Each structure stands twice: as C-alpha cells, then as structure tokens.
Length: 167
Image (cartoon, rainbow, N blue to C red; front, top):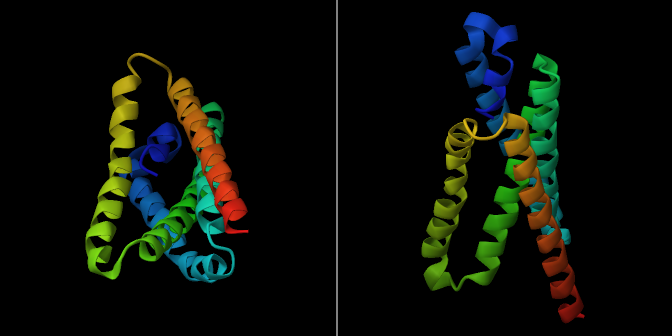
C-alpha cells in the first residue's frame, strides 16, 4: 500500500503524501470490513480463507505490476482494495489456525509469535527500495509475484493433504 502512491507521483503532485495516507486507510478499512464475513466462511470451510487471502495478495502484486506499466490513480485504488481483501482474509485465516492449533495455555504466546511474523511484511517496501538500484521495480515486483504464487501453490497442496488425511 505504501509502494503504490509513489508510482503515480506525477499524477498526484503535491498531494502524494496525502494520497498515500488515503490509500493506507482504504487498504486497512477494506481489510477490517472483510474480517466478519471471513470468519463465517472459515467456520464452514476451514483453511479456505487463508487460500483466498493469499490469492488476493497475489492478485494485488500482479496489479502492482500493472500500475508500474500503466500508472493510474484508479488502478492504484483498485490495487489497494484487493490488497485490503488479501490482508483481512489472511489475518482471519492465520489467527483462526493459531486458535485451533494452540493449547489454551499457549494461545497468547502463539498469537504474539503470529503477529510478530506477519509484521515482518512491513519490511517489504524497504527491501524493494534497496533492490531498485540493482533491478527495475517491475522485475522486483514480478519476483514477489513468483514467490507469492509458489507460496499459494504450497498452501493449496498442504490444504489438500490435510483434507485427504481427515477423510
């Protein structure tokens, strides 16, 4: 969400910092709005929410490539919404998994570890800015898309194995 607005700074001009705040707020608001329906979906179809969230994040990364190729305020807003959906779904999926797999006596610590690991993602913009001197933004984001796709495939396979074992 913070990488997107600078990609269209020519279109936002003096409002780039304000636009970044709007995009951050939009992404987080969408993430919060999808959490309640995600809880319901997770109750009926365990594991599905995490996979949908990962797919949403992958689509968001691919839309980021589209923003790099075709800078557009509307495309940045759409990408922020998609990232928000991915964020909300993966958060609910992850916290639900932690809740179901942790003994009650370790739930607080497990949640703390979960949040600590998820916040590592805040380093991604820094990593991208460090790599831009070596590779193009497009190449870096496509690399992230590849990693996201591999992660999604691995999670889908793990989900399938878990369902087969449950039967």
